Image (cartoon, rainbow, N blue to C red):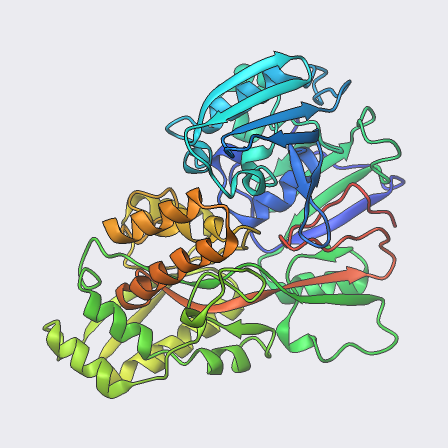
Length: 483
């Protein structure tokens, strides 16, 4: 594919700023919110979410679930083609789900319950699970349900991460690394009347204030982050508005339990109870976040008492450090995103831990670099948040289960593993919540991850943009947009 392609000035193009440069444009390799935003334009999913968070048809126009909750039959849209002209059918679904289960796929834990895929006919596929798995349809609304062209995957091999091909409304044309990603209208898109513009250009702007200035000047139509200090400063004549709604996600930092100093849970708990979440929410985020102590926001049924932040307790923190043999204090490295707000959070954490003799060195890194460090386990503390998913399993399982694909804390206990597994097998929400409550009783003491807040979805949008839909997963969908 071409690199550095730009659309003509006369074309109707939606310009969207991203605060991170997407790493890999392949859903099986992805763990960044910026990537998910780009994916929505390139890839369709088997099912999607509507504005209320309800699962709705997409490439699967309907589905049935067996009484034992172990067999899912998907009835697919007919006549759909991938952007390279190859047909989308049941065989393509089989190819994508098997690929998602491969060892090197970050979707493997989400799809591991599929034991048998049967291609009934071109437009019908039957999925048999090893056991009931409550989050299954929810998982298919995101990257695990995104369909890549089998021909393109075979053609490009390892380089498919730079050559994505889906059935979505826009076709990938190229990128300038660290600057832009350019998409053009899919003229053969299967949804009638969509997309409504000629293209989408994603502009990488790590500094939220630079993105804001581009929004004000009209160089950008949508920003995926908005300056917190500007939320209350919008005047009546502004040509933009702000979307500021609670999200499903969380923000905080991993503690590497596999190496000192965080191999001792007393040390981790001491750090946890020294942090004043409410102060961070007020000073840094202008109140546009909720102080947190769990992965479950109020928007999820698993939200519970564990989410109430602990009171700052210097006396207890010092006692915990003494029990861990760290009475004299210690130092560690906290790796942060390059965004100015997280730098400010890091500075506040430095000040909050200092009275206990804990010295924090702040180190900045791009998100893709942080993720690689998390996988390799070379970090001490890693500030990486999560944009959130509709089913609570997707906010906790891979982060805390032993050897989970997002478990950069290198944490694992059989008790938590078993509780999270039971929650996956149970379809009753009240019973599932009880399992999550029990798991959180352990996790708030073991502290593999220090939860700081539940972020809001905070987009800046030009008033000239029409057709914007706010979906609870907080990801910008472009097919219906016009300007």
